[in-house]
Length: 138
Image (tube, rainbow, N blue to C red):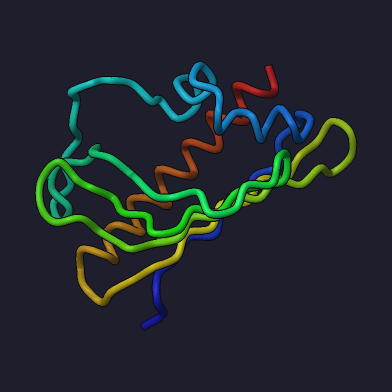
Protein backbone atom coordinates (compact mmCIF):
# COMPACT_ATOMS: atom_id res chain seq x y z
CA UNK A 1 0.00 0.00 0.00
CA UNK A 2 1.46 3.39 -0.97
CA UNK A 3 2.57 5.81 1.72
CA UNK A 4 0.04 8.65 1.99
CA UNK A 5 1.08 12.22 1.39
CA UNK A 6 -0.51 15.35 0.05
CA UNK A 7 0.26 17.05 -3.25
CA UNK A 8 -2.44 19.45 -4.43
CA UNK A 9 -2.35 22.37 -6.85
CA UNK A 10 -4.63 25.15 -8.02
CA UNK A 11 -4.36 27.84 -10.65
CA UNK A 12 -5.57 31.20 -9.41
CA UNK A 13 -6.23 34.22 -11.62
CA UNK A 14 -4.33 36.63 -9.37
CA UNK A 15 -0.73 37.90 -9.26
CA UNK A 16 1.75 35.64 -7.45
CA UNK A 17 2.57 38.18 -4.70
CA UNK A 18 -1.12 38.45 -3.81
CA UNK A 19 -1.50 34.65 -3.65
CA UNK A 20 1.64 34.33 -1.54
CA UNK A 21 0.54 37.06 0.87
CA UNK A 22 -2.78 35.28 1.46
CA UNK A 23 -0.83 32.84 3.66
CA UNK A 24 0.46 35.60 5.93
CA UNK A 25 -2.37 38.17 6.07
CA UNK A 26 -4.73 37.61 9.03
CA UNK A 27 -7.82 38.90 7.20
CA UNK A 28 -7.11 36.77 4.14
CA UNK A 29 -6.50 33.69 6.28
CA UNK A 30 -9.84 34.26 7.99
CA UNK A 31 -11.57 34.55 4.61
CA UNK A 32 -10.12 31.54 2.80
CA UNK A 33 -8.92 29.15 5.50
CA UNK A 34 -11.66 30.09 7.93
CA UNK A 35 -9.19 30.75 10.73
CA UNK A 36 -11.30 31.75 13.71
CA UNK A 37 -11.38 31.40 17.44
CA UNK A 38 -14.40 29.14 17.20
CA UNK A 39 -15.07 26.36 19.66
CA UNK A 40 -16.96 24.41 17.00
CA UNK A 41 -15.20 21.09 16.66
CA UNK A 42 -16.28 18.67 13.92
CA UNK A 43 -15.71 15.03 14.80
CA UNK A 44 -14.17 12.19 12.80
CA UNK A 45 -14.71 8.52 13.63
CA UNK A 46 -10.98 7.71 13.57
CA UNK A 47 -9.35 11.04 14.50
CA UNK A 48 -11.86 12.26 17.09
CA UNK A 49 -12.64 15.97 17.32
CA UNK A 50 -11.18 17.96 14.45
CA UNK A 51 -9.70 21.40 14.87
CA UNK A 52 -6.81 21.80 17.25
CA UNK A 53 -3.51 23.33 16.20
CA UNK A 54 -1.13 22.73 13.31
CA UNK A 55 2.30 23.90 14.37
CA UNK A 56 5.74 23.80 12.83
CA UNK A 57 8.86 25.82 12.17
CA UNK A 58 9.33 27.79 8.96
CA UNK A 59 12.79 26.72 7.85
CA UNK A 60 12.89 28.35 4.42
CA UNK A 61 11.03 31.46 3.35
CA UNK A 62 11.39 32.82 -0.18
CA UNK A 63 9.33 36.01 -0.53
CA UNK A 64 6.74 35.57 -3.25
CA UNK A 65 7.89 32.04 -4.12
CA UNK A 66 7.09 29.75 -1.20
CA UNK A 67 8.01 28.43 2.18
CA UNK A 68 8.92 25.17 3.90
CA UNK A 69 7.68 24.17 7.34
CA UNK A 70 9.60 21.43 9.16
CA UNK A 71 8.90 19.57 12.37
CA UNK A 72 5.17 20.07 11.86
CA UNK A 73 2.59 18.41 14.08
CA UNK A 74 -1.19 18.40 14.18
CA UNK A 75 -2.21 18.72 17.81
CA UNK A 76 -5.83 17.52 17.91
CA UNK A 77 -8.26 18.50 20.68
CA UNK A 78 -8.23 14.85 21.79
CA UNK A 79 -5.59 12.17 21.48
CA UNK A 80 -1.94 12.16 20.61
CA UNK A 81 -0.32 14.56 18.11
CA UNK A 82 0.24 13.42 14.55
CA UNK A 83 3.72 14.19 13.27
CA UNK A 84 6.39 15.02 12.56
CA UNK A 85 5.55 16.18 9.07
CA UNK A 86 6.83 18.66 6.52
CA UNK A 87 4.69 21.18 4.67
CA UNK A 88 5.85 22.98 1.55
CA UNK A 89 3.97 25.68 -0.34
CA UNK A 90 5.19 26.85 -3.75
CA UNK A 91 3.79 29.84 -5.61
CA UNK A 92 4.68 30.25 -9.28
CA UNK A 93 3.59 33.05 -11.62
CA UNK A 94 2.03 31.76 -14.83
CA UNK A 95 2.04 35.18 -16.47
CA UNK A 96 1.29 38.52 -14.86
CA UNK A 97 -2.24 37.70 -13.64
CA UNK A 98 -2.24 33.92 -13.08
CA UNK A 99 -0.53 31.89 -10.37
CA UNK A 100 -0.02 28.18 -9.78
CA UNK A 101 0.00 27.24 -6.11
CA UNK A 102 1.20 23.83 -4.93
CA UNK A 103 0.86 22.46 -1.39
CA UNK A 104 2.82 19.34 -0.42
CA UNK A 105 2.78 17.61 2.92
CA UNK A 106 4.79 14.53 3.89
CA UNK A 107 5.45 12.46 6.96
CA UNK A 108 3.86 9.14 7.84
CA UNK A 109 3.75 6.27 10.29
CA UNK A 110 1.74 3.19 9.39
CA UNK A 111 -1.57 3.43 11.24
CA UNK A 112 -5.26 3.92 10.56
CA UNK A 113 -5.01 7.34 12.22
CA UNK A 114 -2.29 8.61 9.88
CA UNK A 115 -4.12 7.28 6.82
CA UNK A 116 -7.34 8.93 7.94
CA UNK A 117 -5.46 12.17 8.65
CA UNK A 118 -4.33 12.37 5.03
CA UNK A 119 -7.86 11.64 3.78
CA UNK A 120 -9.24 14.48 5.92
CA UNK A 121 -6.41 16.95 5.20
CA UNK A 122 -6.66 16.39 1.42
CA UNK A 123 -10.34 17.37 1.52
CA UNK A 124 -9.52 20.32 3.80
CA UNK A 125 -6.77 21.67 1.54
CA UNK A 126 -8.93 21.23 -1.55
CA UNK A 127 -11.69 23.29 0.07
CA UNK A 128 -9.19 25.86 1.36
CA UNK A 129 -7.62 26.40 -2.06
CA UNK A 130 -11.08 26.70 -3.63
CA UNK A 131 -11.90 29.37 -1.02
CA UNK A 132 -8.58 31.14 -1.66
CA UNK A 133 -9.27 31.11 -5.40
CA UNK A 134 -12.75 32.58 -4.87
CA UNK A 135 -11.39 35.28 -2.54
CA UNK A 136 -8.50 36.34 -4.75
CA UNK A 137 -10.35 36.21 -8.07
CA UNK A 138 -13.16 38.52 -6.92
